[in-house]
Length: 143
Image (cartoon, rainbow, N blue to C red; front, side):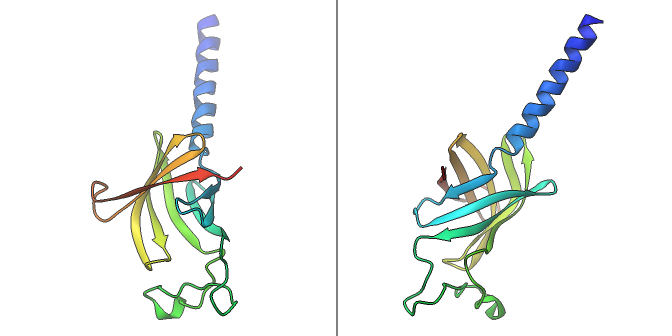
């Protein structure tokens, strides 16, 4: 009976730590250039992220920046603030994968995976095709 109780505690603890580590990326992150905050949140069993702060939110005309580099002309007028940049990530053993990242500076969408480098540092790897061909940026947690 003691072994069964011990096993139940170990199983419960492992499940609790799994849930905790899967949600470890939830929060605000500063991009590598230091000019944007991305809020990562959970939606169902997937993780997404939206742009919630810009160092320079307005263009030279004093109006809010829009998605001017989007390949779809119909989307070029949408505001950058609030724009969903990260979509569809699932957690798998310390890595958030199978998602995409949109780069409003180029108007391109890339496959992406993320992993925590530390509690306050997030490796964000955008790539085309296979993850060997890509670039990793390190984002830092906003306190």
